[in-house]
Image (cartoon, rainbow, N blue to C red; front, side):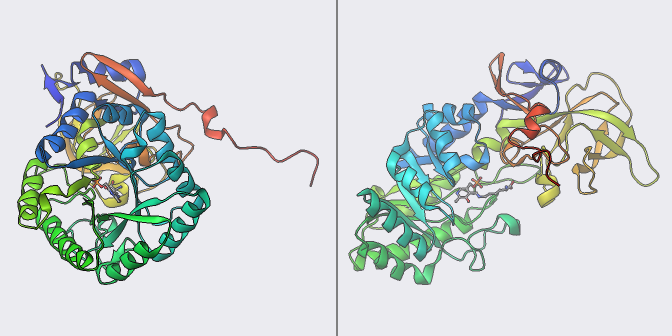
Length: 423
Ligand code: LLP
């Protein structure tokens, strides 16, 4: 559930009409709802109740400082994949002791900084990474807390680009090798084994793959136990899907209760701390992208609605053929309805936000692309020298600019002409 609703024919973010936001701040822009972020985060904490847990929001989904600051205040931990994400979390007031560090290619300087600030755990994805972490920790006289990211080889049944738990994916340590790699981890002097981790994919709409993964991880934990390696926490990654169209993904409550019931049958399950790394299920439906219709271009075989947002602003439709709802912001005027491809100004045929959408619109109208709070702005680029959009956060009846629109001069910040006089 989110807080973007129509009132008297106009779409609102909480108590603010989106048309007012577009008039005051221009388009394209991203508009987030604070209450929706809070609600989605609480859905997880309430679902887990008194079971020991930590919700580490996946920063990659939406890394705006206001979003991170808001979640930090609610007690969130964070799942990061780069030094940049770590510094964002710290800047936003996040607690480093609640940070887990994922990613297949952590560099020595990133490990050093994370050790310095005292993160909760490194989710290690390979043997050479373990060895590098052991060396970096040794140089600092520190003991690095580690989990191994195990690839349980389950099919998440999602888009191939965002499925990560299969044997053929670059992620994690194959489950059959995990025992040996844990033994290596336990033998290295500057590491301490803390957890077991997996992340099988994103936009999952069923609980079965998660439960399969859990079963495989519990089997592995049995075997680790036999070898005297105890695990304090189990990190099940992110991946819970959201309704973009007619998907009916499980709610955090269903997901958590199924996991907890499976875990209760396992010896020591009640005491095992569960970590989750949700991104999309917290952020996606907490945001929309606003765009204005520049031109309507009727054609013989297709009608185009050319809008002022493009694939550089929101790349999901172009990259994954992702479907996101596109709705008019103001429905009060009667307009003729037609089927449109909603396309942007970028010079590529793949630059579309939606295809074959039934819309009753005219030039100058505002459209909202829904479910744009996750993997929206964070994946934006300056392609075609387009300044990146503004980001706004609505809180009740106020609207705050949480990232100013880039200016044209921002586009070449850091660039330089070649020195004069050399040919
Ligand atoms: N943990 C790890 C290790 C991950 O790789 C990811 C996402 C997450 C957590 C968060 O997953 P979520 O709860 O958001 O599903 N750009 C794509 C999604 C890429 C997801 C990458 N990893 C999209 O727009 O659909």
